Length: 632
Picture 1 (cartoon, rainbow, N blue to C red):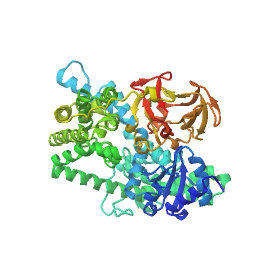
Picture 2 (cartoon, rainbow, N blue to C red):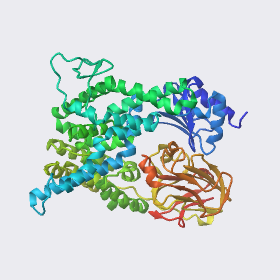
Picture 3 (spheres, one colour):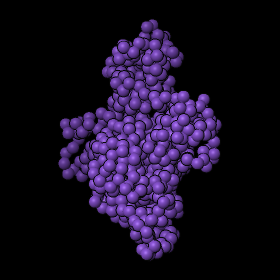
Picture 4 (cartoon, rainbow, N blue to C red):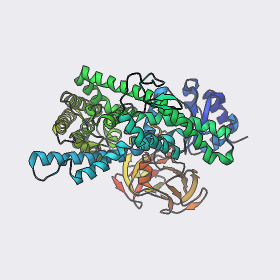
């Protein structure tokens, strides 16, 4: 019997029994269940159970937070349930809505950076046309070679969207990624697109499986070849279907020939069904969805802008913005324009203006130093540091930002601002509202909405918010028995632990500490001690100092899903280490390109053993700086 057998049995019983478990994996601190029915789990009992820190639900996973010794508990849970370590992976879990959001975010997040870059290039092209036609400073037309090349660079990701989504969706659904790319490429095949674009349905034409007029047949079955270039949803559904075919194929095809015959049967079955039924059905459904949003905007543009602007940052906090973003991408790729997100454009600026006002009124010097990098980040459209580190903890400023964003949203929608590409965030998104012909009226509206939203949010915060008095720390020098200094393990920018996007870290349930936004992909030992835990995926490491301080360094959020890719360990579990010794290297751009945050919580997991934990008041730290001082 394992050391944690009793705890494992209680956990299994209170997640609904082994028959309620679809799969189980774990990271450095959590058991990650995918349950058939989360309603059968006893949340309150688990939260109050000795040996369990808390329970969280995220991304279709039921997460039981254990602590650094989770690998041992995991092994005993496997023994209790009869599961094997290979039973993790894709499985249904959570509500249908949560699963849809998880799928959409998993498919789109990996290439959002490239998508924004392409949109910015198209926006710059449009801006140059505008400056040429309006001011005549230079000659720049849509027929010139420079325009054509930049347009090709910016437009390619939109034109071949099914190929890119074929790859990301394959990763999400567990399909062979190369097969996913082939599915996307088939949807963009030139002759099929030519037929779709030039189709003229004669009287008496055959009808497809959906009752639509058809001009081609497949094995005698009439079918309609849709124009799938620049489409979004059909490839995701076809890949999801192909993943199920792959599972069945692997069960019946001998392993020795699976490399060739599994992709053969997956493509031979999934793509014809995709062309005959899935593609037309999804295309019809997405057209209806787009018409529904357009009808709502037509009914009351002001109300739509007000609600979207006010609650956009709330949607971002809970990840629900993924229910709207794909629709905007679909409309831009298919129609070359969209108003779906216009009402949200001023939200990040309103949030930034709130932080500017807070900077003048904050009494806590440490928070004041955090305001400046949060402002710079917010101007560029990244508001998480502002939200989690400053406005949300203070409550009222966050509400004031919602008010300013709501007014900005009304202005955008009432003036009919339309985006012509999925451009960059923040100030880089303004050029998205310049039409390809150089009409900049939408960009002027965006600037007006931003200025009004910022003005309202700044004024409300500056005149109506008052910061709490900062209680001066007492001099406890004479009462300190000993102190331990933790130097910085990762060079970068310090943020409060409460600003972490991960609820368990942010609430401090795993201990006290800070979050570091890394500038260099290297973790070094912050003291002399021992490697207590080194997770197999190398994304997290637990250390214990020679004086007994236990420290967890968790590189990125949910990076366990990378399965060790982009991480290199320079030590092994049980090694003795010296302060400054290299422990782990990681590739920051590659991790971010894969759609993961690299923010790194640094947690003293036995902080309850100390009288006080004092974090550095520096904004930026190197690996020679003191990060945390523990007093005992």
